[in-house]
Length: 279
Length: 264
View (cartoon, rainbow over the protein chains, first blue to last red):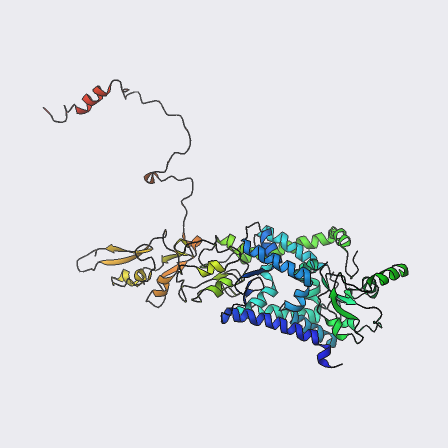
């Protein structure tokens, strides 16, 4: 398989990530009106508002009123990610994703010793805690410290000290904790994995094609979503944690994975029955 | 059911009430609140027009930067970690680029969160307030007819007026001192920008840093506001003051009784 084929979705993701940043940058510096603002709040073609629903939730938790534009923007974004998979944000949009992908790549080579016993549910705790802290301190708690917002803002509006945060994430993922930021700590990822729990676009799995070679597992940023029995039963990856990033599609030599829709699953029922009995 | 790995909602919720997790969350939450509380205590900055009161503003601003992009004069900036304002919130430095007070306030229109209150007329904006911070370096106080800040003011004669002070001794010139009317000043900073000396003698400062407050407990008799706000029993008249008895006629007679005034 050619390199391009094995990275076809990764290349697509990088293009989308870079394209979004470029459009925001052009909006800020060349007054191109396609996208103005940033990931916290944006306007498409000068008309359609978009806003970060988790940021909006935190602001509402502070008890202050928010203008309708921001609320409508949040609903639009929520709706979109409900369709394409909540954590598609993480894989296709978030500016931190290339950094953590890079860290995962290098980590598999340097294989640092030692493991931190950190619960993967921590990010849900942080997600909830941010809302409580927002209510207490009267400021949107995660937005004030978010390395995602920081990175994104500084790419568009000029650099500051915030790029240090990106270095911090890189080191964390490299030496301290595999996928420490995205899979363990990031409350925005946690929020989107709740949004995408029942999302429409999902990765279909064809157990007949799978020869259990396991190539997909090390490639996947959230390997716990690739449990063969569960996949064979449902016929698709039914988890909000899946990023819809397409890594498994790329690396599978036998094309066992495809992008599909939740309610259009050809062979799911047969396998479900079979597997239930087997278990 | 949770077929895709991870923990089910029920497992998560029952796990949530283990004391160790609660203790960790409480500690983390306290530390987090502390950090936010510290970083919110900034020295204050000059905000875009229409900005809601500072605490409300930093609570609701989504840091999207659309006001920054909407400003045709590139006045606004988003605060970085090195700046004095809350990270990512918009502010401006009038000495660099002031607010040119656009009639149609594109910054306010662009704000999706309402942190810049929509419908604010630009003359009602209170971005800060101009203060003549250093009389010693102000040329007008030296007796020069500078008046640059006065003429640069978009609300000339209203937000800054000239206070004429005659010389205190022969040969000393009349001085034309700039006087900011805080009631009208929008804090646009045209005066600070225009000030001709090396470091401006008149600067725009954050509103809540400058303006005092009389408070509700103190009445101002001369404005017609009631000084006494609660009910009380009137004291009896002092005994040596005779009570008024009589008629309008008698009152007129007594008023017109000029005896003792005109003299014999």
